[in-house]
Image (cartoon, rainbow, N blue to C red; front, side, top):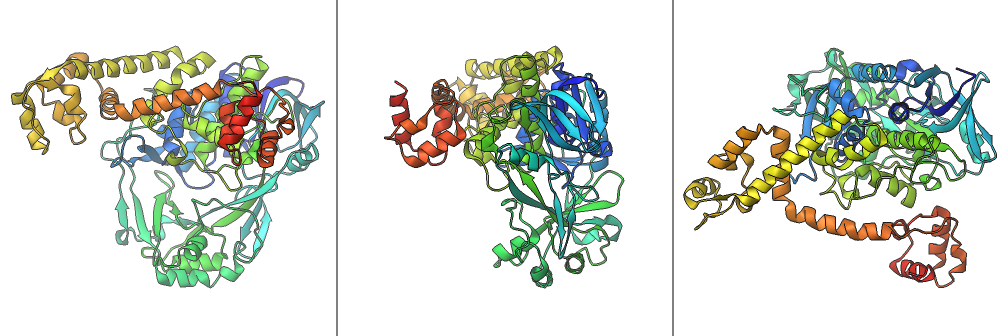
Length: 623
């Protein structure tokens, strides 16, 4: 091992590192995954769940690209929910509650079955660099391992510092030591670094809770799954979650410890995730609220450990315990471990290219929380893209970049590279201007052909996608071509309080009505016969319904995306000298010089660059 030269070395085996290693190895690159503890591969450091608003779309995209997150989410799921079903399909977001131990085990077993992948357990303390190019890594034992590319996925471990009340100690996660050496070396090389923080709630003993006092939160009656592959199946039975609430009494008890909270007494200066605030943040920022929801989530099928979602905190353990015992259903609670906050180093992502390769060091890639993101799904998608591009670089092939109209992953990376982030970045549907195109149901249509071109998606996966696409398109065309008479249509329409028709009309127009469902149109003989004769499955029926009901919105977004792509095709020369454009604002020149956008479209998305600045730039480039 130590005498070999690896194509790709991945440092860290969290969600980003695991996806990066799998992608690079599956593309044929000789890959090494180095981590401080092989027992904690793909560990769920915070909540035991995958997916959610926008995050579920990302997991579907990872799966369509040949990553493993969707598969493992299915095999380790204990509950499935499709969120936002009351809204349009652009907002539908799959989410699973996971068995934490099984999730990590399934990830490790999948990685061990992956060809071209080696493992090594030790801390990487430094990088081997020659003439601004990465050539390997150095471990804490002084061992040098050579590599043509390196992907850093250090998570919260870079100089990690854990806080519980007045106490703090080094660590990258509860019970695990921090990683040192890399930040200092990168800063010496000219990288900018910063500090961020995140937090996690207490874990408690489910045997000490009274679930009868809480509201039960069951999974979907007809659960779906994440992976498009047939190797996983929807859940046949599920575990329920529960919900309870804080109260003014709980808030008062928590306030008693605010002077010992590192976030309130000034000991933690770094910025935490805006959209996942601690319980003390919620009480402080929303002082008018008398209660906050707490989701009581089991950690697995058989374990009694429970995750208290919504009670993230760094307050002293005695304050946490006393306050939680005042929550309904928690009167006799026993702790497995208290909640804590963690500070860690990150590197502003404007220092990266869209491939996630650093601008300063050739062959060095960053992925995950090192780039200032938060969340398993955001990390996993970056790891996948970094692993793909590291492998392509070694193979001397063109890089792989997803545009904003192609994937949430494209939105995520473009936001990071173009705008940067000063707080932990979390994906939302609102961040995607083309979210009607980027639905969870069509990620395979969007990305599987591209994954097949990379050698990640198998021919079997591609053919399955093509069959689904062909069947759904043909079904939509059937509705466009087929008419229904008033005597057959009106009883169905009137049963749904929808206006009757006076003459034969195309089924497409009737099905496009907002209150008409697939169950309604199946009452038309021709529709039911078509479904039965062609043996159409639920996926195809759902896909056709979305394409019919939202065709106007989809066409409009496609037109807008086409306009964007015209600007994407206008390339800006490498190392373009913006200082010579005196008619452009000083702020724009500084931002453009710092970020070095590769296209006019990317330049237009940089904060501080106005439409007038873009016009000046186009004129200067002779456009």
